[in-house]
Length: 81
Image 1 (cartoon, rainbow, N blue to C red):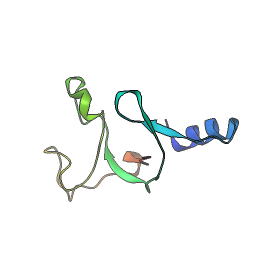
Image 2 (spheres, rainbow, N blue to C red; image 1 turned 30 degrees about the horizontal axis):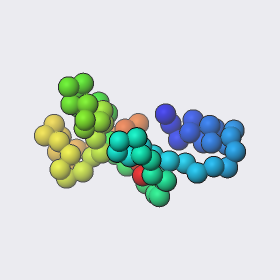
Image 3 (cartoon, one colour; image 1 turned 45 degrees about the vertical axis):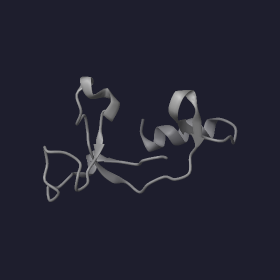
Image 4 (tube, one colour; image 1 turned 30 degrees about the vertical axis):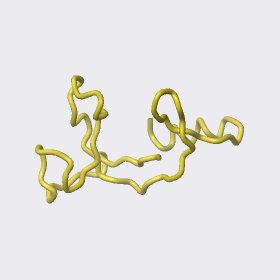
């Protein structure tokens, strides 16, 4: 889902609390929204589902890249937590 798709869904409904998944069926209220951040898409296999499909680019992100490797604008994401 893109930021614009999310905004359209939120604007079409009433002004309600927005939550994110927590452990064992619990939820938390969204507390922060990051600035666009470089991300590696599909960096984990289906057998590594517990990591999530993608991984943010940082100093410890993965063995497949170098911290100095450029990440192009299409590979940016906004993290909501």
